[in-house]
Length: 266
Length: 266
Image (cartoon, rainbow over all chains, first blue to last red; front, top):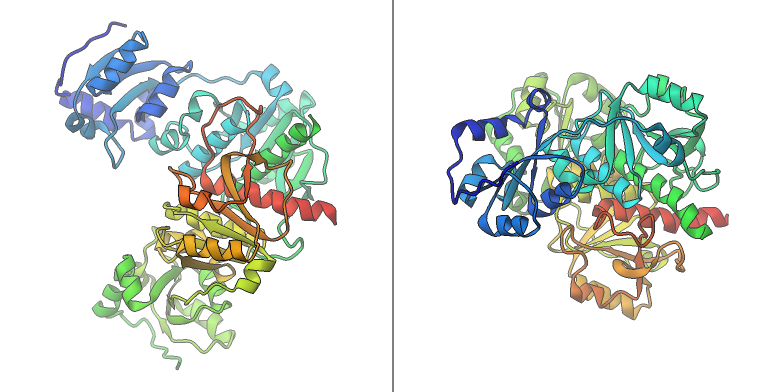
């Protein structure tokens, strides 16, 4: 890729239309592209294995990028032009188009580590928050059912705050994935109402943690594959107050407990 | 209040305008009213001390309400009319107008229990999620700085999923509140980067837990009042990945740990 620098070039209508069309999943699928905005997020993604396609940014940001010796396809432009391609309320200094990576399950990684499995998470904000907290807790793999919210939805990408650069997300047929995991004797944890108290059950350092849909929880077929049912106790225990926790909140409490066990053993 | 039942009455334009105007904080403040929608949420609120002003619902829901012998001002209407006053994408069977309660600090309650203190939480979704998780963890009081998101914002009310009925939220001058708490020797915990490992520090059963703004964290003045600085360790510890956790996620992990200590002692 060359480094085409043209100052304050006005973006072509075709380019603006292409970028704006990436709002829809069908267009992301057909082009294999997605959008990321803002310096922190774009710079995080540039450091990752995700391949950049085009960058649109202000002159000072371009100077920083060139300083870092990236071999990039940069178009220097102004805020007015950037506002035409940005999906954000406040126009950022950089908008980038990345190629959607082909993520595949690495069973050796899955066997040795903690992995989140999302059974039809529908809210883009929840998915973004879960990717971000996975990053915090050093979880490198998230496996989603095919019906889950799309990771490359603009809102999800922004909500990950750059965690997308460090956490691999795969979309799979969940029954097939879980059957294979069972075959390999990987512990399969799941958050279920009738589960064992999270704080009193054995937790392994590796395994799958299955989290369910916002309204319906874990589906019946998926639940049948869960070998270790866990439950987050409310307080005071046994008194019903809230009926449930938000799925991202529940995920964070479970991940924190898995990690606490290791941290407190050290 | 009487029970005025009129079948499929068309809502007056004035009434529709009044209800729609409650979208704005200034109108909620001047009228002292807020909106809640959907059966689960409205029924939860009807069980609470929050006073209902008007109810608009379909005939089957009205029958249930009358069956419960509530002495309510019910207007029976149809889905078409409800869609005119609803803020939701899917029109609910019930829309209710409630009076904003005058919440005041009860220092005896604060002294004896765990309380969340929110220093300028700005995102309505985060505030709603925090009220919901407080309910799960049996936290009955949340104290917000005056600059925080408004609890009676329609999005917050819906996001609490009914927890609003069980958790008291007060807006106060935070410096005055914290000064008084200090005087009363109430432990003041705060989530700060340089804090002690959450899992290794002493946690009391009572106290304040201060959480900071989404972008800027806890303000300098507030931080000066914090006597017990705590930090949620990332994993692997010491390796910087994500720069931070979402504030609702961080709040949930801290609340879970406070409660775990008690649950595991029993």
